Every structure is written in C-alpha cells, then in structure tokens.
Image 1 (cartoon, rainbow, N blue to C red):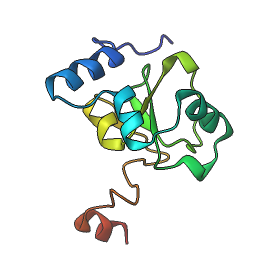
Image 2: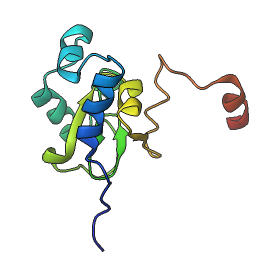
Image 3: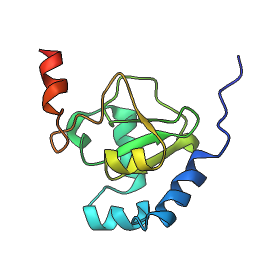
Image 4: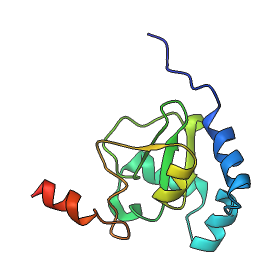
Length: 120
C-alpha cells in the first residue's frame, strides 16, 4: 500500500498559513517560548519521556498528525517531522490531533465543559 500523499506539502502549507495569519514562524517562536532546540526535541521523541510534554509538539508531514513527545505511536522518520511550540500552532498548520496521545488536552488547553461531562 502506498503512503498517503496530500495535495499540498504540509510544511509548505504551514509556512503559507504563518505568512497569511501573521503568525510568528516556528523558529522565532522557539526563541520566544523557550522551546528546546530541534536536536533536543528529536531526542525527547526518541526516548519517549514525559518531561517534555507541553513544551513542544511535533507534526508528521506524511500523515498530517501532531503528537506529544511521549506519544506511544511508532517513531516517525526525522525527515518527516516538524516541531511546534503549541498544539494551536500545529492545528493552524493543518495538522490534526493524534488519537492515541490526545495532544490537544494539555493543562493549558483543557476539555470544554460539555466534552468533559461526556467523558464521565
């Protein structure tokens, strides 16, 4: 089975939206928000530790999904990964949340009340 291809490269779409929305670029935001360097981010993904959860998120260009660093899913190829300072930035870039690690449910972005009630 061939890998799913998107009509527009996800990284290109992320840069396009950043320019259109006047959003700070990922590199600039890294410095503003204290996001770790890309090499450290990649090591955190490879180790799967929870200590970096909420500090950055990563998107997989080939699937269009973004995750937490501690996601139990298969580790993607480094060339297919792009880093984001927040879940909101990943969604603006056109990525959807992972169904395994649910990165949109970070402490700074809790479930809305009706959704929380449905889970109880």
